[in-house]
Amino acid sequence: MPHDAADRIDTRLIHHGYRPPEGFEAPQPPVHKASTVLFPNVAAMRARRWQDKSGYTYGLHGTPTTFVLEERLATLEGGRHCLLVPSGLAAITTTALALLGQGDEMLLPDNVYGPSKAFAQGLLARYGVRFGYYDPLDVRDLAGKLTDATRLVWLEAPGSVTMEFPDLPGLVRACRARGVATALDNTWGAGLAFAPFDLLGDGSLGVDVSVHALTKYPSGGGDVLMGSIVTRDPALHERLQRGHMHLGLGVGANDAEAVLRALPSLALRYRAQDVAARALARWLAQQPAVAQVLHPALPGAPGHAHWRDLCGAAHGGDGAAAGLFSVVIDARHAGARVDAFCDALRLFRLGYSWGGPTSLVMPYDLPAMGPRATPHLAAGTVVRFAAGLEGLDDLRADLAQAMHSVFGS
Ligand SMILES: *Cc1c(COP(=O)(O)O)cnc(C)c1O
Image 1 (cartoon, protein in one colour):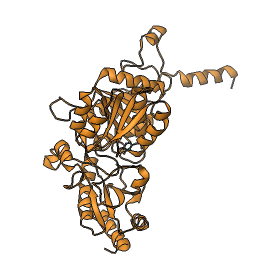
Image 2 (cartoon, helix red, strand yellow; image 1 turned 90 degrees about the vertical axis):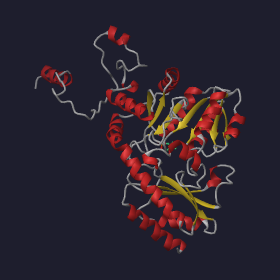
Image 3 (spheres, rainbow, N blue to C red; image 1 turned 90 degrees about the horizontal axis):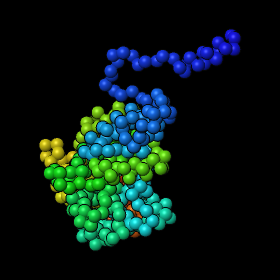
Image 4 (tube, rainbow, N blue to C red; image 1 turned 180 degrees about the vertical axis):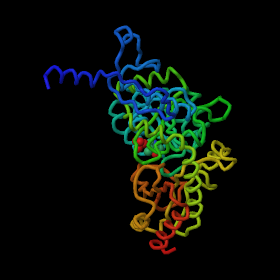
């Protein structure tokens, strides 16, 4: 083949007259992959702004695929603006890095998601941001710890692992009274159990920022890592967006499409895993080896009344909850036997995360997770369960066989 003909083919393979198929308006958005976005001319390039969605500038600042996902997630959470990040943890760290500076103070609930503590103690402390913990079950404790330097208060409902459900409206009100911004880790609520930007249902009270580990329910497959940062306030969104841009964060198009594909079944999966988890939690509460069940929807659980106030009206009065709960295995069973119980389970697999099809179990060593007063918890070892989508009878039988073989009852 002559040299110039090969060059022409190379060129034509790039500059061919591709047009999307006419009339192909599929409901599912396509996967758009791009770093470079081409401009028709210099004037059009200069006119485009990376900050808004009126046009495209560069893949990192958004594609049609990520814009659609952002809009749907903002809708899900009742917000107006959304930023996508590569993990739930990145949603937490990006929010803090974008909103805080040297000398500022951040407060965390003492039952907060563990890696949030590590971030505060590590990178943030090194950058001169101070932090402290408050008792999420005591609004007055938080109110008393807010200072003129406090710029951000994290909220989690319920807390990770020990599942205490706080008085979320009370905590937000205390922060509002001092003009302190609130950020909720809304992974458990998923935008379904309650409305983070409208906690009282009358539009009068809400959090300022809602972050969400899309890794859990929105992905639903146990196969995607992603996070979102949703806000209502345009000025706050702009600060977060600038931080997000400075940090160079983006998500892959195939991952965004996987979440888009799973979103339509989100509410169905959330409900199914809620029903299964509550049935399993009630069954476990009857077992002699179990000293306490920590499920916010079950009477007697720490903060149950707060859960009922916020989430109790959903689903015809059954209320809404994620398919996640913990139990305390009685202290008379030593830690090694609790490990043996987790190992004896066959359908509940040992692994982190939740919200996927596979039921999961994880034992936790609370003392190793940091000093904290827990008078509301029974003595023993905490084990967390996440209901998957297996048959409920099979899951219950699995718990029964492991209980019987290890604890003898
Ligand atoms: C899983 C989880 C995160 C972090 O999400 P990743 O995508 O795993 O980084 C944050 N907060 C809560 C409450 C979580 O359960």
